[in-house]
Image (cartoon, rainbow, N blue to C red; front, side, top):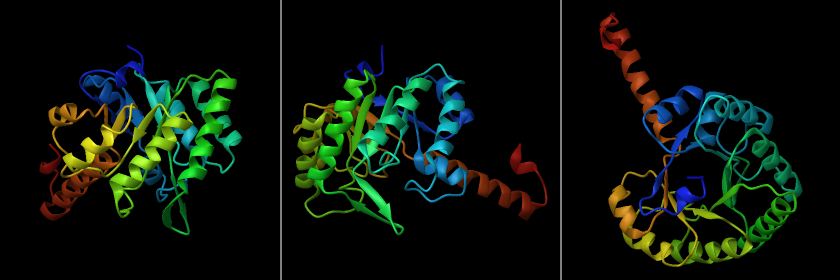
Amino acid sequence: MNFRDLHHQNSPLILCNAWDVASANIAEELGFKAIGTSSAAIASVLGYPDGESISFSELRHFVERIVKNINLPLTVDIESGFSDDPLSVVKNIKLLADMGVVGVNIEDSVVKAEERKLVNAETFSKTISKIREQLEHHQIDIFLNVRTDVFLLGQSNPVNETNKRVDLYSNAGADGIFIPCIEKEDDIEKVVSNTRLPVNVMCMPNLPSFKRLQELGVKRVSMGNFLFEHMYTGFKDTLKAVSDNESFASVF
């Protein structure tokens, strides 16, 4: 089953978001069907804040190492594409596709002066349309998962604004729609019923169970950088115990 097909099953694709070879290998060992990179986690590893503070060449290095060490489909979070120019974004996508990457996430928000803001919906849909046109022109077969940050940024009337953007992005050539921070069943149902595209939600404290998400029609579930943060919480707790107890007992 190819990566596209994984978005059209009865049960949602549970995507493990990895940040290095070790985390990707663990996901493969445990039977996950696909891996996605976490931009926030990779940025954190290198000491950067999230939001394209990392360079594209640094991201490519991580992607190359992961691709060479797994036997699963890999989709990459390219944030807003590492360029304002759609042609340059396509060049970046092609470089990833040439490595063996089968999907990308691209988002409709940008971080400027440490503040994340939504891009105008019509403007971003034109960008997606140009990217899709160029992907087809160059015969680059890659799953274009378009992320909208309406819920993440706490916008007013989030369902209405999300549905507006989903319609635009769908018509522009998106293969899937990613809506981080949506978690209420009623909101999820309204968004899913509004589009023919597979809807991707993200790990959240009040996100419904995988079974309930399946019933609501969700087709993909991502983990964001929460596994990464959870791992380091455990690391901190263990390290504190080593220091407090003056013993390595907590490690074993």
